Image 1 (cartoon, rainbow, N blue to C red):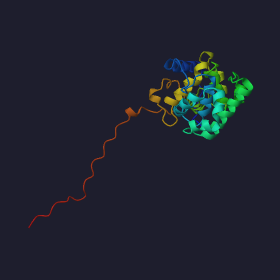
Image 2 (image 1 turned 180 degrees about the vertical axis):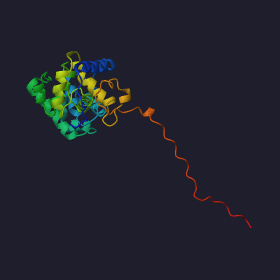
Image 3 (image 1 turned 180 degrees about the horizontal axis):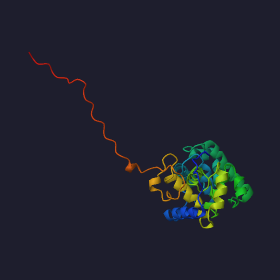
Length: 247
């Protein structure tokens, strides 16, 4: 994960933070992950598969995978090669197939096939890091955790909401400054805002609901307001070619 982002020169104040979240909440009253899942187990697998892959791509792969293996028992029975055959369209599929089998085996061995509702226990699962654990705790169990991915890292730094040099720093600041009312939805609001509005290369500041709150000065203007360039005139011939007169 990239850890570089343009940082706002000043941090948001408490009132501004509350206003930022209020606006994001108004735009998306019921924020959810865009990964398809049916229970904590399929969510763990989907999030583990989503590293360096798009949610759309993961959903296409898991639609077929979960149709035949949606429990740890079925996944282990499918085997590493079997899992690999379903996820070859996403990045790092070989290693991910290995991790899916390993985490499924550990869930059966240590937790009776259930997904633990504990961050430390979750991060012991192969292929599950702190970010994945936080997503599962938030989405599956309703815990007020914030998983910092590239989108959240970028938005937090650009806006001045939670500046930090790395994801852990940003997560710590977000947990400290985010009002309790908004902690459960904060992860989804920030990630979706970063994905669809605050783009890495060309943020759509002209249609951003929190643009006036955001401390980042380099706002992107509306392309529609840019002066239209005149079409280049047709090139004139250097010499006018005419047919020679007939004698």
